[in-house]
Image 1 (spheres, rainbow, N blue to C red):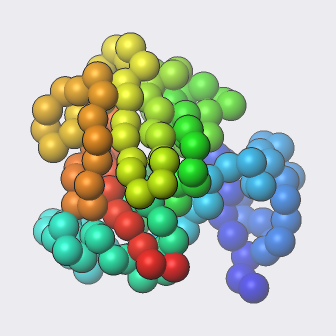
Image 2 (cartoon, rainbow, N blue to C red):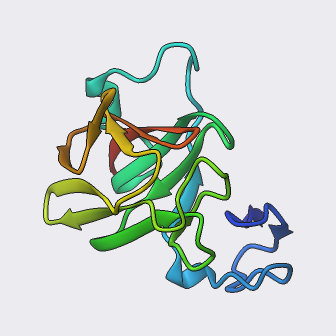
Length: 154
């Protein structure tokens, strides 16, 4: 197994480690983090390509533009909080992101996003939303982070 990078502070830690020695993040309580190489950052994956991404299982958010391009957050069933607050499951440490910005909910074969009253809003396909159902290939913007909704077969 290769070493991994902490999604919160970017410290490189040994594979199999359950807590980051630098920031204390517990890895088993966080969404799975992977890296998906984007073939061409200027042209995102097509909806068909986003519906069947190798290397991930279930729903995922691929950072398409902004800090950490290519980093992928695999979303587990249930609710995943996103924000600048240190206990967020997906921590986006940037002033353009509210402390409790939004949350993603995975149920069976569905994925939805809900804005939590953020200052700068949550956008899906360039439209500001309070709540939206998502499909592979959709684009979600949270502050300076542009995500591509993807799905994998495992």
